[in-house]
Image 1 (cartoon, one colour):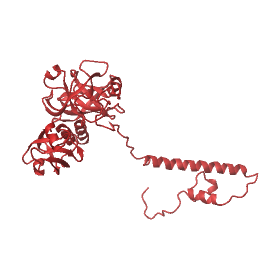
Image 2 (spheres, one colour; image 1 turned 180 degrees about the vertical axis):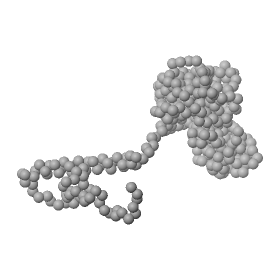
Image 3 (cartoon, helix red, strand yellow; image 1 turned 90 degrees about the vertical axis):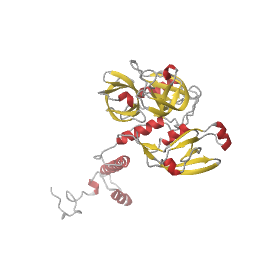
Image 4 (cartoon, rainbow, N blue to C red; image 1 turned 90 degrees about the horizontal axis):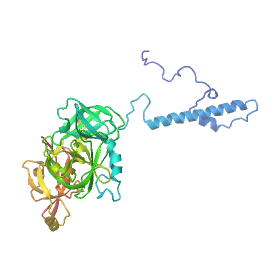
Length: 401
C-alpha cells in the first residue's frame, strides 16, 4: 500500500476504540482515572462482572509491566540484532604476587584442572606441531607463528579430544605470535594474567600438549629463573624480554601456557632454536602482556603494530640505585639518533623510574609496560638524571620488521 502523506495520522485505526469496560488492557491514564472515581456499590446481580473486570485489569497491568520490563532489560525491540557478549577472562589482580604454589594459593592439581581445558593441540596436516591457548570463548586460539607457518591445513584438538578445523587470522613475525580461529562457540578459556611483576624464584606451572601424546595436556612445575632474557625461537626469530623458566620444555609445547602460583597465565611457552636450553633444564615464555596486545591487534585489524621508542638499556645496578635513592629502574645505555627518545631529550645514563605513573623496577618491566601502548601514543616518562627527577613526554613511533 503506497504511503499517503495526506492521511489523517490522528484518525483511529480500525474504528472507534472499545469502551474501557470492554477491553482487557487499559492505558495507565485510564486506569488512574478509573481508580480515582469511587465505583458504585455493587449489587448481587453484577458481582460476577466486577470480579471479571478486576481480573482483566490485573492481567493487563501485569502484561504491560512485563512488556515494558522486557524492552528495558533488552534495550532493543525483538526484531533488532541481539549482540551476544564474548567471554574473555583477565585476572582482576593481574600482577603475579604468589611466591609459592603451595603457600596460600591453589594447588598444582587445581591449577592444572582449571587451565588444562583451555589448552589445545595444533595439528598441521597430519602432524602434531605444537600447543595453543584458548583466549576467547568464540573460538580464538593463540600459538607461536612458527608452529603454523606454511600450513596447508590446520586443526585444533581440544583437551577432550575434539578436533576442529582452524584458519589463521594473522601472524606477527616480530613476536612469533599467531592467532587462529575455529568455528565453535562456548569454549573454555584461560584466565590471562600479567608478567610485569614477575621475579626470579617465583613458582611456575607449564601446561602444554606434547607431540605424539594423547590423554590431554601435560603439566610440569618449576620456578622463574630470570626475566628479560633474549633467545632465538625455533622459527629463527630473535625474541627479547622473555621469561626464563627452570623447567625443560617438552617437544611440541610451543604455544602452551605458563601459569603463576595463582593459576593465571602469565606467558606463552616458546621452544628455542637450540636444544641447549632444554638440555640445561630451561625453557622460555613470551610475557602475556605482549601476547594480549598482539592478539587484540590481529583480531581487530588482521595485523599487529608495535610501538618504538628508540633506546637500549639495562637494569639499574644495586650500587647506583643506592646512590640515587632508588629501589630499581631502567638505565638507558644508548639512544638511537632521530628516534622518539632522542627527540624527547632522553640520554644515556638517564634512569627511567615510571611510565604514565606506573613504577618501573627493571628494563624488562619497562619494555613489557611499553608493549601495552600503540604507535602515536604519548607517554609520560619519569627519569632520574643524576640526582634530579624529570618528566618527559614521548610520542611513540611504529616499529617495522
